[in-house]
Image (cartoon, rainbow, N blue to C red):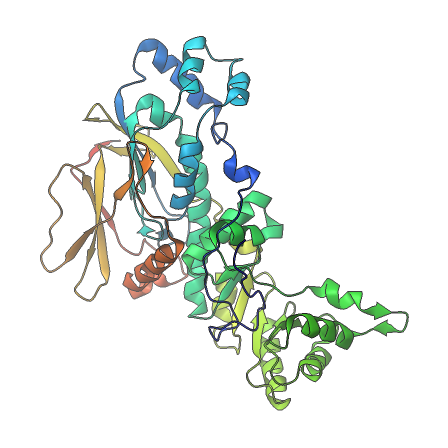
Length: 468
């Protein structure tokens, strides 16, 4: 059975009202985890495969790259997330009898025979999870036959476009919070399986936990939460509402370190009732409506007057990175973020593409106007000053000597993830979290701002074949 993680928002052992991070191992796997992923694709991947098998080009050696031509409007950097999920899905990408029966309606026998034995046996290189990326960064590169690689386009893009969008938005919120904890609370605002992936991506970016229990079970994301307004409203009798009874029941069940929701009725009375029931050791109160800055100041003063100076204040209610930044000067201890987080805070996709860049060692590139690409298998380097501040990303052909720059450190960004079909990279989430934190610290100061502008550092393409 998985270890128990304290879910009381106001009673974590790390002193912030949040539980410490633990590893959760599950006794079993859900249907979604065990299911094959081959049908999570677009039909034209299979029709291209059929045509390539017919004309003999299916087994040419290729490299496909995943990258973003540009960052979403207003963004200065992106955060790589979803790498671990892609590596989990890759071995399950196969065609069972049910899948083969479905595609038999439009594929010939030779293609069906190929799909029946399909396993990815190529190599994958990529930026490690939690690394920052910029326009043109080769976040993921797949090397193998055309037949092997083309089938994985939709799977790779659906994972990386979603998870990178969520993690990039979450990282901006983490920066805006300036060290105050954040909890992801958006499960009810998105698809039920997207909610799990969003919780994971937010955790990678630096969120402290999530309300989603499946994210805890599957990925070890700490699950957090106490009660909603419904619990307070439940304690209503013919004589009227009894907020103290609701608080008393919650404290009896969860202890005085819990978080009490104080704005169901009158917030001033709610705070008074909360302290009257739990005493000065009350873990936290939550405000979910109104002018959060004004109310936070009011509640802080009231808590102090009632002898509860250590009781924390949690705020929720349609927060995004801008609202969080606006609350920096207020006595807020932590934030709960829902809709804005799981929708990428206005940018629900990272805008990544999956492009063929090399065939049998020959660079190839797309010529379409405004959708040009750079041919050839690549490696990327991040150049940093002795102080650790990043100044540039350099992308060049992989067979070129490593980048050198006087007075700067060049760090290779793309690393082996899969070799001969076997996963060789570790997808530890704590390592990814540490990588995001280090990456944000490395950016120039103005690159962390929420205002629109150029990418935090430029990307320079060197020795890459470009067709425009």
